[in-house]
Image (cartoon, rainbow, N blue to C red; front, side, top):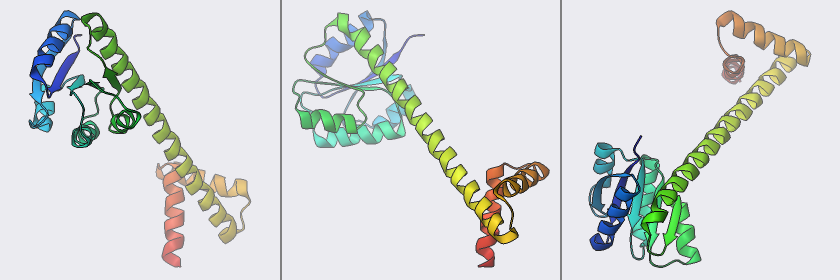
Length: 192
C-alpha cells in the first residue's frame, strides 16, 4: 500500500524538490497546499496518511494551526525547517508534530524519515489508547467500590456480599457491574 503524503508548504521552490524526493522514495504526494489554504477541506478530500509541513521558520500561528489540524485529523506530521531552537522544537512537539527536521532533506533519507514519523505516531496513539482504557477502568473500579461501600452501609452487607449483590443484579438485568453500581449511587443521591 502506497503511503499518501500531503505537503503544506510556505516555500514552493523547496517543496518541489521535496515532492520529487518523496516520489523517488515510493510515496504518493496527493497534493501540495499553501499554509493559508483550507487545510481542513484538503484533509477531508485527499485523506493523507502523513503531512509534511515545509516552513523556513514556523511561526506560532503556523504551529497553532497545525495543532488544531492534528487534533481534528490525527496524522503523523513532519515539520521541515531551516532553524531550530529548543523552544521551537518544544512548541512543535506540543502542536502534535511527530518529527522536526532541520536541514535539507536528501532523497535517500525521505523514506526512513516518513516511516519513522508514522511508526512513532502509531506508537504514541496506541499508548494514548491504553492510557484512556486504564483511566476508564480505574474510574469504573472507583464507582464499584463506592457502590459496595454504600450497600455495606445501607444493608449491613459484608464487602463480598455487596459485590455479589452487584454481580447478581448485573447478570439479572444484563448490565455491567459498573452500570449497576452507577444506579446504586444514583438512587442514593435521589434519596438524599
